Amino acid sequence: MSKYDSVSAERVPAMARPVISVELPPGPQGVPVLGWNVEALRWSKDPVSYLARLYQEYGTLSVWNPQRPFRVFAFAPEHNQKILANPELFQVKPDRKGKDQAQSSAMMTLRTGLLRLDGEEHKQHRKLMAPAFHHKQVEAYAEMMAAMTHKMIDAWSLHEVRDIEDDLRRLVHRVAMKAVLSLDDESEIQTLNELIETMLSSAPRAFMLPFDLPGSSYRKMMKSANGIVAFLQALVERKRPNADACRDILAMMISARNEEGTGFDSAELIAEAYNALCHESSASTLVWTLFLLAQHPQVYEDLVEELSSELRGGNPGIEQLSRLPLLDRVLKESMRLIPTAPFGTRFNVEPCQMGAYELPKNAAVTFSQFITHRLPEIYERPKCFLPERWETYKPTPYEYFPFGAGRHNCIGAAFAMLEMKMVLAILLQRYRVAVPPNLRIDHIFQLSLRPRKGLLMSVAATDSRCARSPVTGNVHALVELG
View 1 (cartoon, one colour):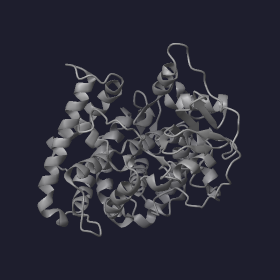
View 2: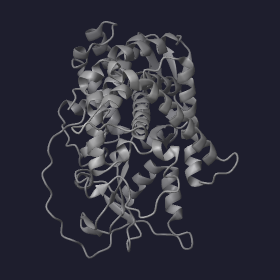
View 3: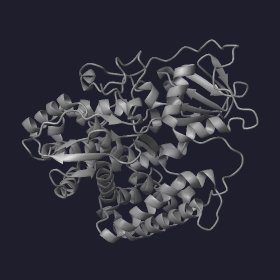
View 4: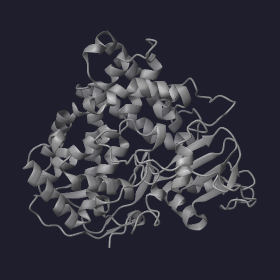
């Protein structure tokens, strides 16, 4: 385990086989005529609020359609362990006989990376990718991360109000493009960024209305996906002749070979390169962490004091990061309270038991970091931002798992932790950021849990003293702000 990964690796005792209940599991009722479409609409509109409502009304295990529970919601640590520690039983893809109509499309290529693989294929991909994400390799990116962070904040001015989310998202994307692809050319960076942004912004409507019509979101999404695949294919071919001499992630994946001398084919390289570029969760975690610090001035002051004392205005070295315990606790608490990957889904390939209930084959079983991280039996005052809780608390991997758990845990967790710590350590020594009074902040889930309309923050000198600003919006459902 990397030194940058904040997830505990303590073992959880094996669970005893449960007594099977003859009762039906609880859950919402379907609507006449419309069936479960109403629930599906509520779920897709605001999944985090929907999960919270299910937990409040039905507890840690609930289903749609108790006669045939095709969608199951399981929130307790023992359910997380059952799902995530048994990848042969609970897989990331449903067991469907038919083929996806877009199976051979560019969009499907981009959606077949590591996180969407099961079994031996997943094991082999992860083994080939592991050297590129080893902590020693990750540490080599520290100076680049620092330089790009300085470049971002050099463009800031005192007393201005900026959309911090936009700034941080652009920064994280640029870091990823440099680390994964070694892209320096501004026109290439802009081209790839625009393709990705168009594809992602078109995807929600495209999946709701998957019709290839002129001007449709579906056509925009597919056209952008074609462009991304073509861009990455050209880059793969450009790198192949001298991949062994390069140290970016794509080059290392091109050179990777298994015991039989086999490596990734072109389609697999494109899929894994694209997935390695997606650091939405890191950007969102940085945004929410700055928001939480601004709303908790004493923690903010203590963290700035720790950074100033250890770093004295300089960039943090690798060893210095281990001597910043409050920075580590602040990030852990931010990821606990607002996990930007708030839920996941697995499909059981055979009938099985979940708790006291029998599940049929191929049920969609959803677990949730968001709900688990705020269970009151695990976390005291669960909706409060309390970094000090991490001075003594050591949760199991199924009580706290912002980077996932089991075989499908995030392979880039060490990279993400290093990046977030570097950015915060540099930014907080340079400026004080605060939320303007009465700003409305609503959360939305779009690849990650993020502010719906960005996050405006004012920029001030580090010696400024800022009180917590009142805010409005459904952010109050995420955190108690006093």
